[in-house]
Image (cartoon, rainbow, N blue to C red; front, side, top):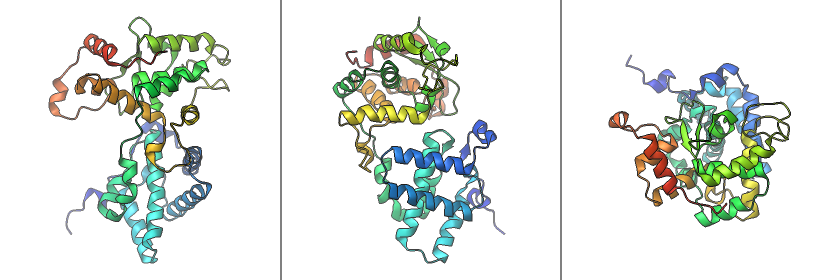
Length: 329
């Protein structure tokens, strides 16, 4: 017998977050959170029910937790579909649901990376066109539009959330985990919690962001009945969560016509990740070197030589302050 490939051995699966995996969040709970998320994003009720049904059938046939799914499991399910003479449209429908579900798990950082795109590229080439919009560039707004957006927000917490996202380019999960004590007011910097995806944990903010954060901290105590450390707190006095951030971001964007919940095109949606795209694009347009932008984003070092390339934090901060767009706050 010849050597088995990693896929055939079932060794290439979803790279799991060890902490979350140990908590054993159930399969049903993950699916429920996913369906709530796509409904919040404006997907039709028909699609929500359809995706739920597809996932139920898949996991009934593949008796595994979502964190344990491998490419071999998708191959087995594809063979089952063909054995049952499912149409190409039906197979496409199933893998559309799988793509969205595991993309959600990756976006929410339950897993490090979804294997569905890799599987699709090799085994379902006919689906490439179907998913092209998901791989395309997310919505990018101008500096003027971002200024209009943030200045339309009166609520001090919500304004602080969106300004911090815009001025730092951090991910939603990173923002959620910031505590008040993580802020260095002298250096105007924040030390983020350790994450597998992030190499540089120090991010900077400018005077505009500092003013907005301080306005929020002046009223934060009225929310903080449970005396928690979180920088951002929800109406129940708990740490603000991912869906709360998504809801407030899209709510204000929709009011200004920047977000269309009825559209299924990714370029018509303004989500928390669009701030990261905005941050990156406008820093580079303002002349910041690519390696400095990568450092601020906390991107992994792509080449061996990057390991030996160290960027001075003082220089990084000065270049950041020179290049980050002003929003007239």
